[in-house]
Image (cartoon, rainbow, N blue to C red; front, side, top):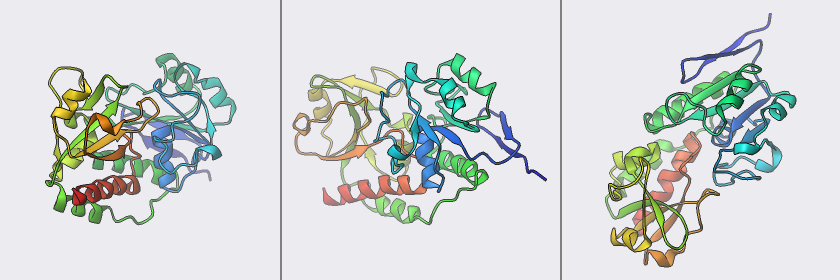
Amino acid sequence: MTEIWEFTDDRGQLASAGQRPTRVVAYIQAGATLWDHGLRPLGIFGSYHDGEAPDRAKAGTLPVGDVTYFGAGGAFDPDRLLAAGTDLVVAVSYGGGQVYGIAPDAAKHLEEQVPVAVLDVGQGRSLDEIRARFAELAASLGGAEPAVALDAARERLRTVAAKAPVLALSPAGDDQVHLARPHAWPDLRALAELGVRLLDPPAEGGANWSTVTWPEAAALAPRVVLADTRMNASPLDPAHLGNVHVLPWNPELPASRAAQAGLFGGLAEALAET
């Protein structure tokens, strides 16, 4: 007797199949998360910020050369994904249930042909909640995380969290920089809850970022900088900020114990050295 596979996603919608899906295509962040749970996706796709090749900063430890890349933004072709025999699509949302990175018509077309599970990674969720939901999905697909000392990494960070001010940012060329609002990002909120002194950008600007000049960013006097290393960010010139310790930051961190332990551990080491 065939066992039906079912999973209720963060929109409250039930994705189901006649058997456990094995040919999964996922948004790159989700694909990296599944990989950390021992599951190799058939393929991945990007967002409108991405290009013709997968963004390695978003991919975590996923071997992007060993999976199919189905494109990003306007170049994403849902029919190509379906022709590959995909039996589940895993997407993310930043709230409201809207699929991130896929045009609404294309998302609707996919859902008419194949199960789609959408998990919320937006500011309405904590880092632990996001990780738990991905763990549930991965377990339903036969995956499991290896043992990772996440609690130890968290406690190590707590012991040095207050040593120096930290600024999270995304470089935007030589003239300006996007400063992250700590409350808008689940990973930054998790750092703040552990006592990290995250610097707040000016109130003006968007919900997630405040765009300022480099002198304005330097005036905040960070000692440690979390610098966005995704494909859409410009390379960081440390001369813009003076004597700071720069750590690579992926705002679309895989929702796994390994990735989160890496974030906590890396920042703890940087703060211990200040």
